[in-house]
Amino acid sequence: MAGNDPSGTGSGSGQRPASARKRGSKPPFDRERFIFKLLAVVIITQLTLYTVATGVCGNVAYSQRQKVVEVCPRVLDQVTAAFDATLKLLIALLGGAALTQNGR
Image (cartoon, helix red, strand yellow):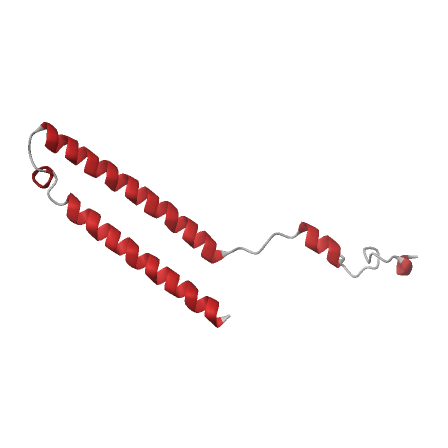
């Protein structure tokens, strides 16, 4: 009496009913959300490293009674360049996300 089975599991069709597919399915992978989370981790790590480096340079400069620029000559330029690049990347990603949402 396989033909009277309303669930369709014994009918040989090989398909599960729709209710079983909904319960066991995972939500689709959100690529944009993953990229933004990964970018947030990178930015926070970068900010932490530059903060520590600037703090160490400041402490060394303070203990030697010198200017930070004399102890670490390029640290401020590197921090500025890194934040400029990060800001440009964020603006580009947000612009790309806005374009894809308008195109949907």
